[in-house]
Image (cartoon, rainbow, N blue to C red; front, side, top):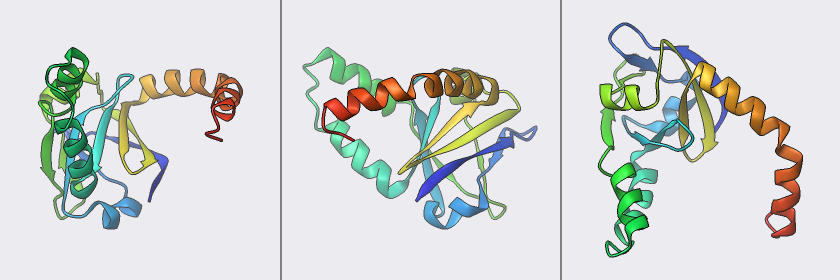
Length: 144
């Protein structure tokens, strides 16, 4: 289970050390791709297989489906986790998420969100301020 948040630094070679607590769950390879709200998503191979299968089953006749497939599938990279628990973040994704040296890895149960530290702070502050209203909306929908 991937939960909690960790602040780490990208090394000069753009390698990211994954939290030791998560490494057993992650295995030897992960998949990284565009996320939402300015983040990147990191999935285990198994979880990525489920997501990719669902995306592949969407209709390519629908513009929204094509768009989401392009965002998620075309920008996905398989990454090997080295013996020190590090992965190399591809330049294109690093640039798209505006990652600087300090990043936050946020566990979202079945995926990790990778954020630039300053962007995470801004987003997290806003989300915490709206948490009560969001909980109320989700409760009205029967989701809480």
